[in-house]
Image 1 (cartoon, rainbow, N blue to C red):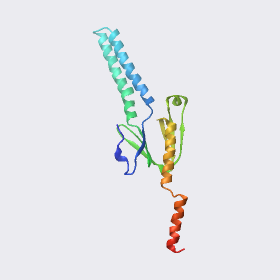
Image 2 (cartoon, rainbow, N blue to C red):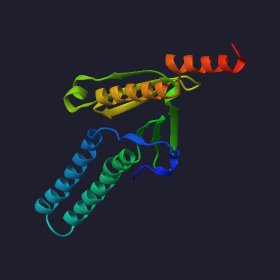
Image 3 (cartoon, rainbow, N blue to C red):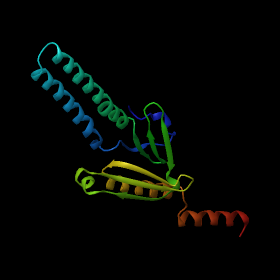
Image 4 (cartoon, rainbow, N blue to C red):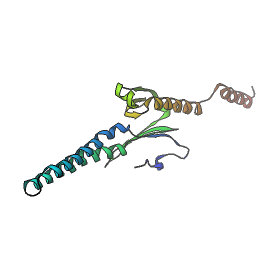
Length: 185
């Protein structure tokens, strides 16, 4: 499921669109492989007819249930989780049947940090924590792929946003000089 472009403002553009790291898909794929292996073993080793057929049906039913609960559901959750970084804000969205979205304007980002455990360093993911002004305080983004690069990009976005929306020394002098000229000083 792609992120809907209609949530962006007119001058806003996407800089990074991420999902949690692919490691979230290891268990679903393993469950699928084990379920298929269990059914194949049942087909090969169980006698045909009678108790063997019933046992094979039970194995098949459990395999389908395991694939749905432990395989398909985590995949759908992964597909519907978005970490979106734009030139104006950070958008965090997740949810399958109901959707939750949190927008953090870049102007409200006070601090951001990243954390990588040993396995995260090996596989290239980590946790990004964004601290913002407001009621909710911190937002924790788990399993961010290439978290070190994402944190650097977030820093660049925040700095660019502040530079764009603040006056430099030269601009402030020009405004004051223009004001003084208008007032006859």
